[in-house]
Image (cartoon, rainbow, N blue to C red; front, top):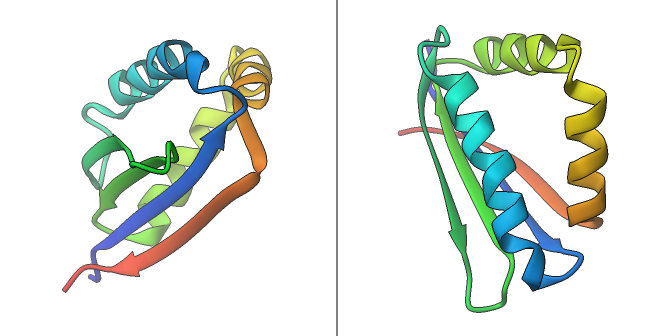
Length: 100
């Protein structure tokens, strides 16, 4: 099985929203605990003020299963709306990398 790393980067609509974004990020981290195939997740702020999130998974399928479960939560529309308010979605990039 090939382990993967999901690397996302994005800008916040305003860097002053960082603490609000961190609340959502911490909530996501709590939902990841104990999920099958999950390895780790870290978030970083670059000198360019972009946010970088790195999550390691045992497989792409396990990551996709979690995403589907997350999006099926009754609170997902609210979480998604909050993310859209905080994150400049047009700046978001995502890479799926194979862990060597």
